[in-house]
Structures are given as C-alpha cells and as structure tokens.
Figure 1 (tube, helix red, strand yellow):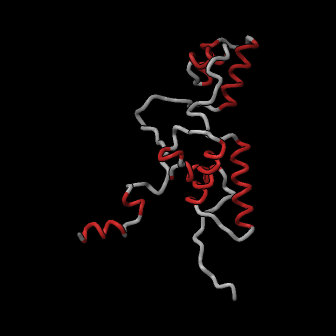
Figure 2: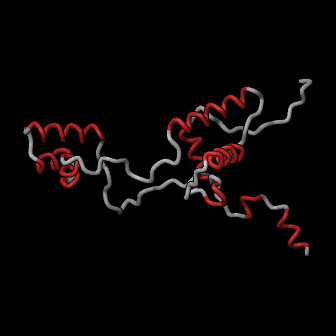
Figure 3: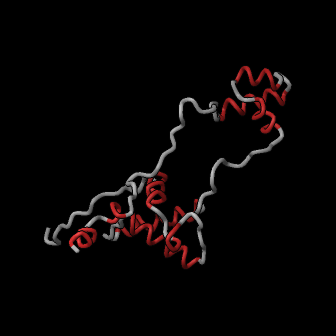
Length: 166
C-alpha cells in the first residue's frame, strides 16, 4: 500500500524514464566515412570536372571525395537533404518563436512543457497528425530540446516567485 503512494510523489521523468537532454548521434571512430569533405570543396571539384580541368578520378584523389558521390552530383541525383523532413516549416517555427517571445514580454514566461502544449493545440486545430509525436499528437522532450537548440533567442530559466510589491 505504501509503495503505491511513494510512486505518486515521484517526478514524471523518473516514472517514464525520460532523459533530460536530446539524443545526439556520435559516429563511432571505426565506422565508414560519411561526408568528410566541405561543401566548398565539393562545389569546386564539380566545377573543375565540368570545365574539363580534371577527371572524376583526379577529383576523387585530389579532394578526397568518393567517386560515386561525384557521379551522383554531376548527374544531379541525391540533391535532397539527408534525414527525416522537418515537422514544421520555417515559417511555422518562426510563429512559435514570435508567440513565445510575446508571451514572455507580457509577463507570462512559458516552460518547455507549455511550448509542447501550444504546439499540440496548433496541430489539433490544423487537423494535422504527426506520426513522430506519440501520445495523441503531443511533441516529445527531444523535440522541445532540439527546438530550443535551433532557436537560441529562446532561453529556459527557472521562474522565481517574486512578490508584486518588489
């Protein structure tokens, strides 16, 4: 009986075993090379190959870019971004940032959880279902941490209760 009551007073992140920081991928040292070149080197190599200054094999050796990558870039294949597409457009995210800053200017600072509720309400009103968001279209902790990382103008601080008389 008392064990059940102890569970009621545990923080929710302990109960759900949720990490506080978003997961960041770290490549293993022994894994295959992936994009070990800069965009400027790639563009310069492609330009020189198209002009006929060097061959694809010479470009591979000189710029340390895999030949298959050069072939694909010359044929304009694989031109999209790597990874999963973003959930919201840049315009939608800027609206979230603007609203968050306005609320804080009015004296209503919001927490990460409040931001997640606002986003969930937006999705519900728009009638969108995002498969990445579990539990009824509710963004996770990772999403909110990454959102704050993408928008450094938003900061998280602990709100201290100060009396109006001060």
